[in-house]
Image (cartoon, rainbow, N blue to C red; front, side, top):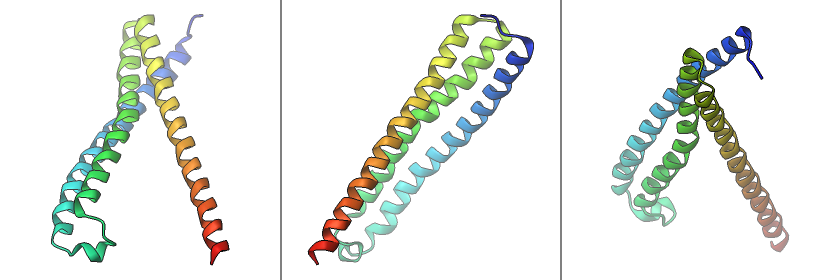
Length: 135
């Protein structure tokens, strides 16, 4: 299979947008990390009873976990953007294949996270229905 010039232009433009979005994602991750420490510091001054018995360290840890999970698809997107751009500029099929593999990994990861999220909501709805029936 050969790519025409128009297809190469589309892939190059998509790679530039992917790189841009991944940089925005990395900035968001950095802000999440800063926020996790800020929340931990601010909430440490409040009594544990005001937070439903949950310690301030839990909130800090939770934000760090979310930032870590969010890093994976953002990194895949960054790899797609940078490698695909490099491949189109250098006309390198192997690097293009690697970039497209990272795009597949990005979407696969987001799909799995979506399935987990939907499953979690379904479980919460089931518990909500059973809770309402027992009242």
